[in-house]
Image (cartoon, rainbow, N blue to C red; front, side, top):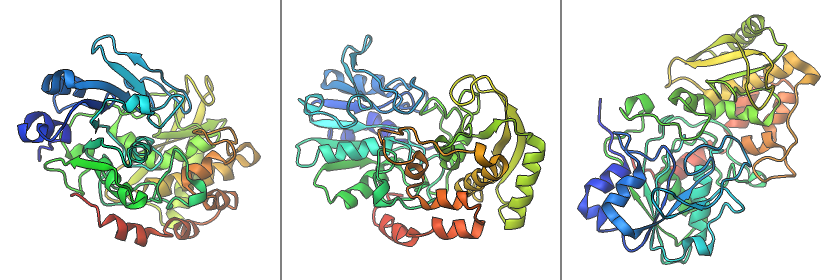
Length: 396
């Protein structure tokens, strides 16, 4: 197995790279910002740069990755061990303020992303880039693997009317870029003069999934405890926009989906038959399951549904499988099935499902119990243009 050397590890082991990091430093990170031996990135950078490390920043879910849900903010504080300020970029603001950036010359971004547009760490990076346009402040991205690979794209291209904190660039749901590449792509979109640099990984190839990297998995957010969950997440995140449980409050969130009162074995049998009839059969299996959420949707109620098991990452189409499952829950539950209309990621006037999908076309397809071929037509609009644009910035 090829040993992957992350941007963090390259920086802390190279005096030449360290010499490019000028002045006072801020560090945007979380619990998964570690090296291959589980050492904290903060401790590593403090050892290398000493008192030049002036400020820490945390994204959604917090600097220590302990906050569960959407629109649950984290606070600013002085870290009791490191004795420097920790600023939350998921607080009363999601854009760093002038005060937060004051006195910094370099802001190092070192976040483990999961390769899905709605996963908000790339939105935090984009807001940071916008804020730093025209400033004498370098953004240095320490690149990390995309755990769902760098080749397959899935889902609709975000339409401008559905731009939000869960989608700021016109990219597909599963975009197959690393964090560094998203930053480079953002420079094209923003036409920005922000000073962005990327310290690339050594050894990573676009064909790799997480298990190919040899790196340890530390959950990048509270409900992604496994790398398998990162793969299913590209699809199952859509259930956040419905009253179907995506397994929050269980030990395998975002790998399962269900609803109270569904008989899971017969439901799974019907779903698999329809999938087979429409040609959606490769790379996964569905297992009937009963699960009991201990918090969030349907807390304390048994939910019947399915556990999605990827069996071949190169063929598994998480987005399509989950959209088709959503259709089948709608068929099964009828009027009991609902799209949520509560606020979602600071958007108060659009449905969460449309913000997640980047369009209202998929929701309308579900309502009409449309076919897989119809879904494919919706999904692939603009894919060719995106791939052509993405080709200009690929680092690997």
